[in-house]
Image 1: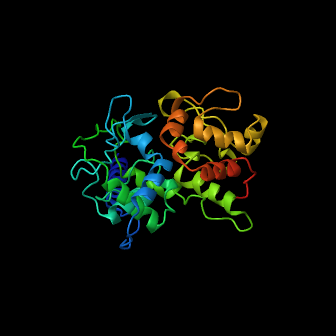
Image 2: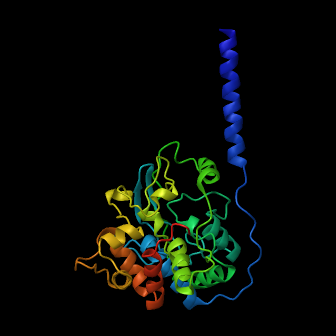
Image 3: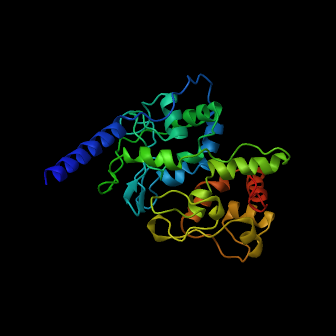
Amino acid sequence: MGIWKWAFATSAITGIAVIGALVVWPIGQEVSPITLTGNVKKGGYLARASGCIACHTNFEGGGKPLAGGVKLDTPFGALYSANLTSDPELGIGGWTVEEFAKAVRQGISPEGEPYYPAFTYPFYANFSDQDIADLYAAFQTVKAVPEAAPANEMPFPFNQRWGLKVWRAAFLKPPATDPISGQDPEWNRGRELVGGATHCAACHTSRNFIGARKSADEHFAGNPSLPGGSKAPAIDYKTLRKRDWTVDSLAYALKTGIMPDGDTFGGSMSEVVQQGTRFLTNEDRRAMAVYLMDDHSGG
């Protein structure tokens, strides 16, 4: 019995030590000073493409623009989107551009805590310093709303953010947005948008039991269990072609929400169009369609 007690005590001490190490384990990389002048118009365009308005404005609850509070029900508990207005206390108005960059590209708060991956930062890692400067400038123009977003409702152990450090180490990888040699500029622009700002895979790729996107074989193969109980169809090129989508009809749907059969997008995809892709240029919507309708299994 003495041996078992000793073994148990040793295991407990080891476990506590491991957890303690995780809690203090620093994550992310230091951000070099960003001194570029941001363009508010370009930042606003990128914010629309990135879904910031749709995810951080509680339209159903009559919320103010970008004040957060949108509820996202997940298998791990309920999350609420953050206040992104220029309020210095309850929004992001007090952040430096470098803190903003670390949040957007690395998913790390100014306090050094990891964000839950419901925030689609894994898709924004390749944003340039100019992109960040533009976004930062645009958000500084958002009217301050001194309202705190509701607290997340995450049961133990999912409310322990240190656990996300392990998740990041296992699953966080750079987005596929870099241009592919030999492809034309339109295709590469579509790749940049689809794999980055518009983060199509966030909804259209299913997740494993701990919330990470599944392997490349299931990329764009659809997701039958989105947060809140809805689902996203497959948008791999084979499925799109089988369902009679074309580059023109897909680009048109990204502008209007109208599908080739005359029906309209429903659920969260309608918000993607209404608050995001309809504000893109015709050229960018077509680039997305060109990329999605092509066999890009090699990139």
